[in-house]
Length: 219
Image (cartoon, rainbow, N blue to C red; front, side, top):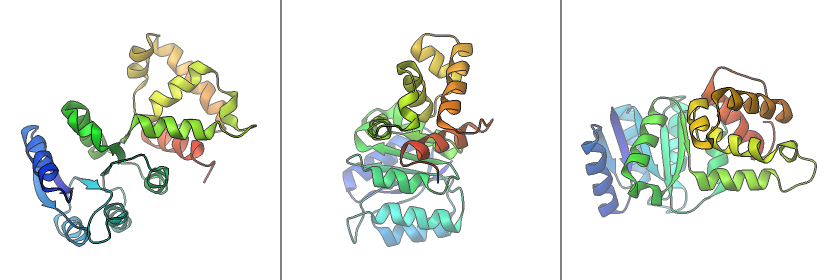
């Protein structure tokens, strides 16, 4: 699996290269700036891009914007964004096109090699990998105003929704909550009914729809 990596800090970039290579990934390019990232994504056609939000020359959201531009040129390009802090705006921008194959992780997650590598693989396979802290903030925001559909969810349904938004399967949710898969399926059905979202066999689009709904309603 070919990866384009963009990170301006040399030590972190070098560490990520070594980590990914140790898990069998091929590093197509490891760059440190926005222009380099744009060229690498256009020319190398990687299987997945791992991108720091803030890159030179602007040190604002250069990395994210380069990745989003590449996704417009190549819809569905898998992109895993790394950020120092939770920025809900970045999460919204990633989710906006609804094509899937996206991830948003805090850099702290990189120090858990298995979790980080699992996120890269999940995104490359077309899934989602959203940082638990991002999900928690979206959930909190979704329930902050009275009368929102989210307010109608039970505590257990909110737990299931949070785990579902992290990309977990029904089996994974059942194992986490120590309940049966049948119970999870029932909770999921209730969640979609209360949020007014159509049921779908496409797990990735289902997660994206839920996240988009929680982060500001239907698009």
